[in-house]
Amino acid sequence: MGVDLKTEYLGLQLRNPLVAGASPLTASLANLKALDDAGIGAIVLPSLFEEQIVHEESQVGGLGDIGAESYGEALGYFPPMDNYNTGTDHYLELVRSASESLSTPVIASLNGTTDRGWVRYAKCLEEAGATALELNIYLLATDAAVTGAEIEERCLNVVRAVRAEISLPLAVKIGPFFSSIANMARRFEEAGANGLVVFNRFLQPDIDLESLTVVPGLELSHSFESRLPMRWLAILRDQVKCSLAATTGIYSVEDVIKQILCGADAVMLASLLLRHGPDAVAGLQRRLSAWLEENEYRGVRQMRGSMSLAKVPDPSAYERANYVKNLVAYSGPHI
Ligand SMILES: Cc1cc2nc3c(=O)[nH]c(=O)nc-3n(C[C@H](O)[C@H](O)[C@H](O)COP(=O)(O)O)c2cc1C
Image (cartoon, rainbow, N blue to C red; front, side, top):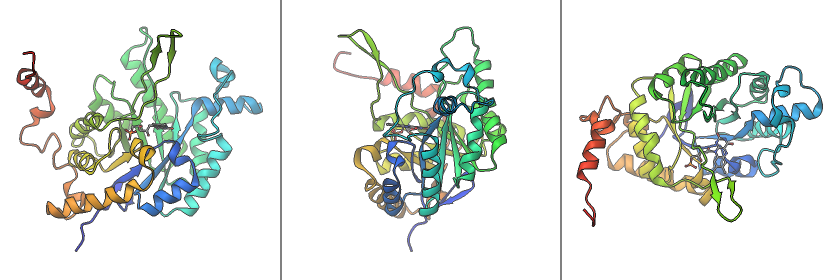
């Protein structure tokens, strides 16, 4: 008898925990079908951005209270997105056709940082047939006059505003820079999140020394980066009831297994799929089944969270004591 790869995420039953994370790969119906055929558990579409919605609304003059008047930058230049989601109409069409033609759940994605009128698009995505919605709050606090408490309230208000628009399951993709991630996780849940996606991977700009300009730095992730979500999933697992998904640096079956052991209900793949294409899914799924079988697990649900902070014999390994132990234990050629 085979092992059971099924998992529950956002109240949805997924055939397995492998989810295609938001990226340009999930922008084409052909890729979505290939992912579906390869057996992916669910798909997150690339985000529709607040700035994009506001910009488009300003172009057609239908501003209403969507909020464009208060966005200097949105009224100006917005980058062409021909290879990305190419605009709200195209995006809604992608949601519609994907939901109709795929057997796997289709999670639409909104990306924004205010609770203004743009959040009404959440309703449009629901009406277009999305199975669930992922809200990415990509907010970097840079103003020294704004307190952490204000930033937290702002993030929570975005979630409340989107929640009020839809009855779909709602996942919130959060960053790792809150002072108390566990407290924020709980408050996101109270604000209406059915799941948290841990974590946003903030892109780090670079400096071009020739032109002395700041240049965007989009590099695909590496496997070692998966330690950040892994540790926090372990910490969050027993402190929130909502679903948890891991994103960042998940490449190998070992990466997948570790995230689930720590508490992930779903594991998101973006860089892996951008590097190797949809075909990477089938192998990962096969290896996950084989590992479960070899290690005598009945399925994913049984192993999920079994190495969370509350379950491991030495919780300090996830906490500060581990830090001290590691520093003291370091040895290298020069010491
Ligand atoms: C080219 C590219 C485009 C992305 N676009 C989005 C997006 O539209 N919305 C979003 O929430 N995340 C987006 N992401 C972030 C990924 O979904 C993912 O969270 C991140 O890349 C970390 O996962 P990975 O290590 O598997 O790449 C993008 C990532 C890449 C590399």
